[in-house]
Image (cartoon, rainbow, N blue to C red; front, side):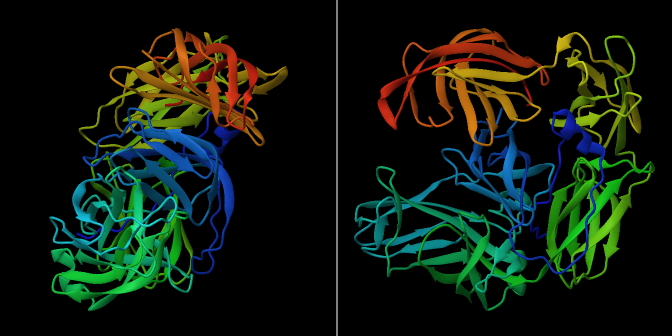
Length: 587
């Protein structure tokens, strides 16, 4: 089955009080003209999961969203708050040594958006001599034919004639994992800069490096010839000629450049540079939106939504914390909507007539007849054993974190899809926003169709978060009310771990990390940047004192440090800094 992915938006509620209210607020989707490529910027939070080539969580992956970065933890999870996104085409970049750069484009919302990226292993396919050129053949039958005396160093454009190492990876658009592994998405801008939807007949990733690891490119006025295999299931429908498209690294969108001709079971075409290359035909697209709810009209969060065309092309994404999902689908084609449980079983299906404009399907109800629908309910009590009327529950189930805001009676609820074989236990923690108190993490067992968690106590531990620091006599202070605060831990070298801490607001920020053994104690500070000092050198010894280390999500990092540093902009000037902090472990 051919599966074409486009990223749909998933909201996860932020842990600040005001953002928690978004969990149960309403959002209206309007209908309108066919989807366009006009910028529509918003600031929102992004989270996601990165997988390795085996579909397992990839730890230590650097995530870039605009000017902000993050690192995945041991579950391959990351979170970036207050990211500069776009409602029509946002870009996420995932980088890890030994892998091709991962890209994902998606239509962002004002909440917390979810993406999933499967990285492609960067394998050495072969080497050629730069002076004579040569060809490299992959297991798929795809080939890369390189010119003689046709290489330059990417960093400065100087010529290069030494050994050229060719890293290449064929991407099968008919593969079952294409949803996660496709670079960008299947959104594209054609040669007339019109936003279109693509149907692929084969893709390839190619990178060139010198023997010492320098990035190389094809020199001006030279071309390379690509032979890209057509999957056997698509050969009968493959056109005799087709457009070539490459990933624009600045936008994550495919751009049309050149064409390829069908030669047997392959497409053959010439390219002037290397990136991800894709053999596709394009068509108009519209934006479709819907809200998935249960029989009580409560949103079903993180449901797997699939839309198929008559040709079995597939668009797939996930509902947000309001049950909403939206994204591009082919225009003028009859479609089928399916909603899947966590094991891939279909729990709902309906036909959608061909669409000619952006369309909101409204609410889609999954009734109680599906045993996969689970609703988790409970009540949060404060230190006086009375209901909390301003607070939320943090719920971790099946490696997904959910935030559920209470109503005026302290009640909260979250509905989602699961299936047999998924571990039925979950962790839950209650937070009282009014008193800034929270309780212990409680582990419980999930049952269908309703799990009642009972009374969750939000008392005993301060819920206050902050970062306060002083540079050369000037004080700076950050809190969740107005600022972005993030702290998380990823596996480090050997059996060590790295904790990353970041606080930011418009015009100022502080970022630092340290390597440790998952305990309290004194550790060397590994890296520090703040405000105007982005490239610092720490004056040794420079240690961080960790007074509190969280064992569970929802608990807190706390500590302090002081010392001197210099910055590359003025290395002779020493700056003094002191800092204290207390931040919740979000993931």
